[in-house]
Image (cartoon, rainbow, N blue to C red; front, side, top):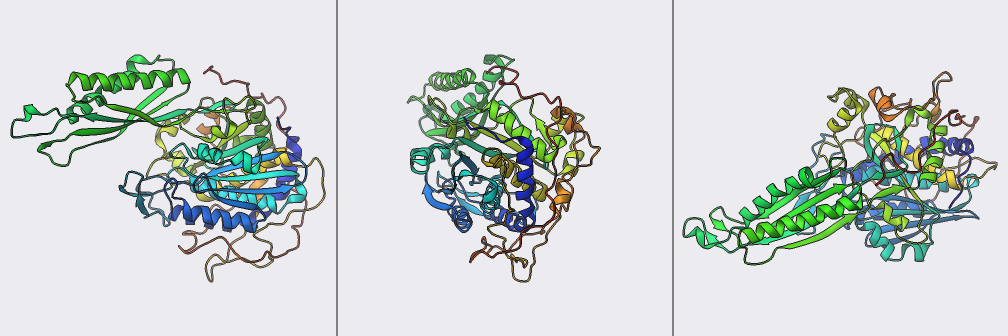
Length: 547
């Protein structure tokens, strides 16, 4: 188990490293805008993976592409110390964007079933990827501040919940080394810039079940009684499935069952030969997952038999993810480091897990005699004005009202979200890699020249005051509070400019190429960050309810 560095020392190292963010942030923001404008479906992330690989290569990483399909791995060795895995996901969703953003996606592609679909980054993977390459660059340019090995993993196929498994099956740990800890973050619906941790279970289980029911063809106007209508069977299945959660799952448990796909037929007057359904389940323990799957199969087969279907239906679990269960000890260490750096007002504890499915936990090798500890946390992304205007009198009402992931209206507040994500991932890596002492200042791997870098011809990047972003008022309380209290009246985003480039770079934008340039180190004292507040209660080793 890796040992974390003292949170105050992490904050000191982090403050020094993050001085570079003003140099690199315009590039990260432009990278994000470019990814958002040009999303790619699962295992089709060819353009994205090339851009990630180019960025990491120029930052000094040993880069390998095509891992697990379209995955990218960058390794940076920097002396003795632990190996820390930082992960992002790259794929987008078959969804039509309706945000109205000037850089909204109009991309279209072909799904695995051959259908032409719109594509949108509606789950924040563009932000995850931009923050990862930015943090990787910051850490590459500040190697005098840490020691060990960084393994940067850009994963394909998270939306299909099998990308992590594909990378492991392609020899991720055998080829690049087994990490001592794996770290990841994902955007959430909390106010932009807030960081949410949870020891134990933070994200639930998810599965997709594909069902084919069979009938016999007929004509709606000529002896319709001679056919067996699979549409009627499918409709009965959909109706009956709704009773599973209501009548077969203990009310003290959490479960969700959704029929998201139902297809049959080509003409209104013809009875088709089959119908197709896709059913999604969500829950927080294996026992409920088994109960849901058994009930789905029972209902499907019973309804087919009741209608005298000529063939038995096909019921197949095609996609599944286990629980994302954060290591409790390492969650405490990272929470302390984030609080020491950001201040207590921006770091909260989640009282309950989310039911979002995630395959990041696969990198922890669940079931292995010697699993890899891992921690995943959430970065708030909802604009504060949207949060304030959301209906509801409690934070939980508002969470249900603001556009969340997988919504066609999902539009993170770009600058606060990216800045918080950059800092949170960098601080997390330094929690394990940071030296207890060490001189020197950092220089950025992609922004080492003394002149401003341009994204497009004639467009100069704008620098902002990072110290203003990080400073806390001396008299500001850092007493620990729960999520409900914090979200009822959330603090504003960290101080500093909140508007970046309105539309980002042109569609031809790529990460910068060419040689690195040297520049004098930043000047001025490091930004101080307070230690965790006295009396702060540590995370419990297990969540409030045992799953």
